[in-house]
Amino acid sequence: MSGLPQQPYLLRALYEWCVDSGYTPYVNVRVDARTRVPMAFVRDGQIVLNIGPNAVRNLQMDNEWVSFSARFGGVAHEILVPVGNVVAIYARETGEGMVFAPPTETAAETEGMAEAEGQQEVQGPDKPKGKPKLRVVK
Image (cartoon, rainbow, N blue to C red; front, side, top):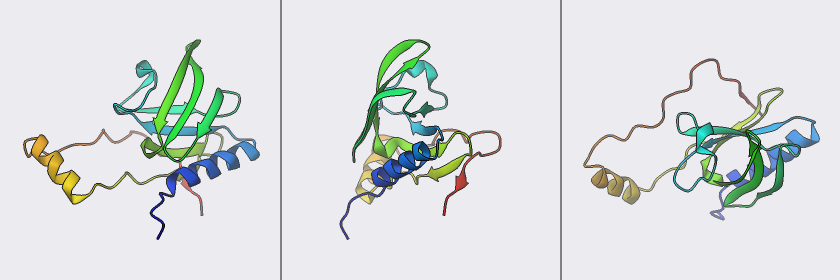
């Protein structure tokens, strides 16, 4: 096994499929300290970004980062997202796309986090409300 994560390859492939199909690719991103996005648009620790060719400039998707510049409320921003923080990519028009599993932690990382949190339970973001709009692509 190569040890390379699949997510960046799938992300690029689904982006290309959306664009080639004439759809608008959207990504749902989990925001953390490494993520650079306009915080005013973050809701429940996540942000949805239109990454279509008409919405962004200089889009780069490598194996570690998604980066581009875009306008939010008329103001230009440089966006920087770790690939592992991309929760989903989908076509706005159809909802077809893929949801990525959250990254797994090693036992040592989990133990270290528990000690740092004083053995408190760590809770994730609240579950989204409403009907899901994504479909599994086979």
